[in-house]
Image 1 (cartoon, rainbow, N blue to C red):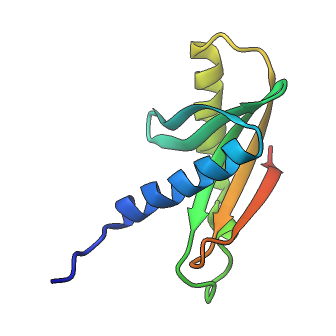
Image 2: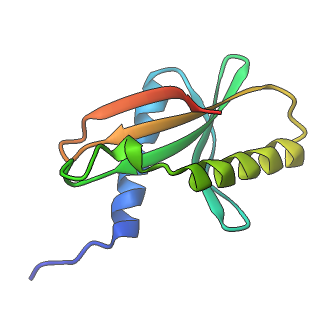
Length: 117
């Protein structure tokens, strides 16, 4: 019997892979799946004096483009708004970056630091 895996479950698995990747790069994971209004930030991490707000993107195929190309401008704006709220709630005044982690079907990871601002 085959078990169907939902897109949400796949997303959580890919976010776990991204989290391990970041930890191996020396990042401290501050929060996963931070939600503010209708926006979710997949991973909030800190390295040195900078907090990174990270969107994880996965695609089974690159036929329609690479995963990182699916972070639209409206989504970027929602992530920025959620990031502002996170910083306010946590009373943080620190350098920030918005990053994208792209994961392909074979779990190949590409990390785009400072992908948008």
